Image (cartoon, rainbow, N blue to C red; front, side):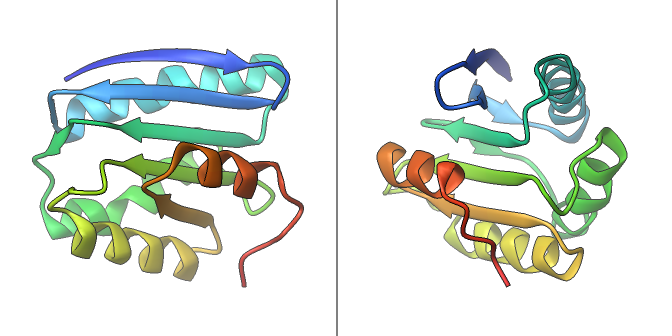
Amino acid sequence: MDWTIDYLKEEGIVHAKMSGIVTWDENKKMDEEVFSLARSKGAHRYLFEHPQAEHNLSLLQIDDLPKLLKEFGLGTEDKLAVLVNPSSAYSKELKFFENVSRLASLQVRHFTDFEKAVNWLKSNQLDK
């Protein structure tokens, strides 16, 4: 898995773009970099873009993702948008990730449109 991480200053969003096969260990390394940058910028909005990425995570690992994200500092005041290709084969897994995140009191949603993802991140709307 390869990734790039940028800070979108005007929007206050940390943007991570991934490609290749997403594994637990590489995802963990990337998350560590993302949250380190966010802390340095005082950011609370995250956009994880998976345009052509494939994941190699089990359902148990997906279930553990909210715990991992919390360990790196994602809190109830933060928002995380996951942007995927509209033809992504992982819609069930993404919905599961949203649900387990919601149960962990985290605001996580997946999108297939960049602009909609950014608009949700910038909004003051809280998921309930």
